[in-house]
Image (cartoon, rainbow, N blue to C red; front, side, top):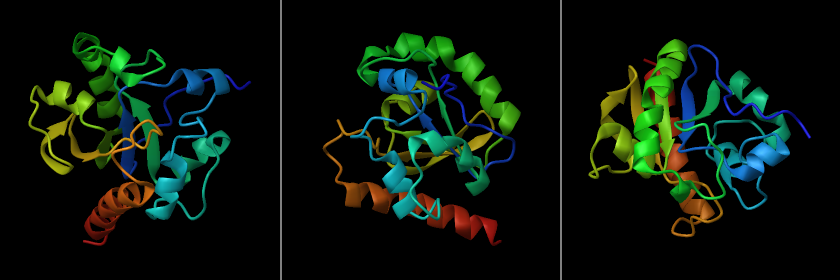
Length: 173
């Protein structure tokens, strides 16, 4: 088993994909999004972020594609709903310091619960947000977890491709 390091970060990335917290499977396997039911690696490839489908064990190579991974709360859980709004608020200071330090162009939250607490509002829509977090633009994407059955893989790819297109357009200006 690999030693688990949840943050895949470097300065100046195009996008950092941000979950609420790591899964217990990630901690056990040593890699983010390692559950066989999680669609993250397929979705980011099909949406254009990578030139091939990365395996969880290749997560560090995401940096070569201008992408990173982090979470608001560092405590792994079996389900994200085990993380309370209070725990998210308590983690905000260190989370924001971490994001300020690497300064990504976009912070893409995977799901609405964490960003709702971060922004202090329940009125969060999918896509680009008007508010910034820790100095970075923010975008909200559906969570690629296999438990999130409200979104098909095709719907996830479409949502993630919209972000990819937005970033490419901004990069070319």
